[in-house]
Length: 126
Image 1: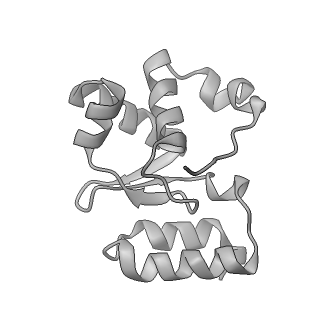
Image 2: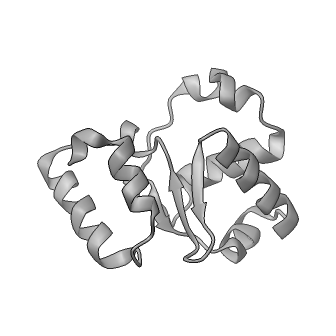
C-alpha cells in the first residue's frame, strides 16, 4: 500500500473549490487510486476509472476535460496515460526518487508526450 500526501488546503484551493462534487471525486481518485505513481504520470484506462469510481464514461470524459482546462491533469487518450500535474510536487524528491522517475519514464510510459510536459513543468528535474 502506498501513501500519498494530500494537504488540507486541497479543499480551499480556488481551482478545486469551483469543481462539481463529481469532479472533486474524480480528482481525488486520480491522486489516491491504486494505480498512481509518485511522478503523477501513470497508465489509467477509463474503464478502470469507471469500475473503481462508479462514474459513467460520459461523466469521466467530462471530468477529464474540466480538470484539464484547469491544468490539474493531462490525459493522453491514445496511450491511456494520465498526468496529475502537481502530484510530484508534494512527494519526496531524493536522489533515489529522481532516478526512479527517470527509469520509470524510459520503460513504462510508451513515449507519451506527457513526459515532455512533465520535464518542462519540473525544469529542475533535468
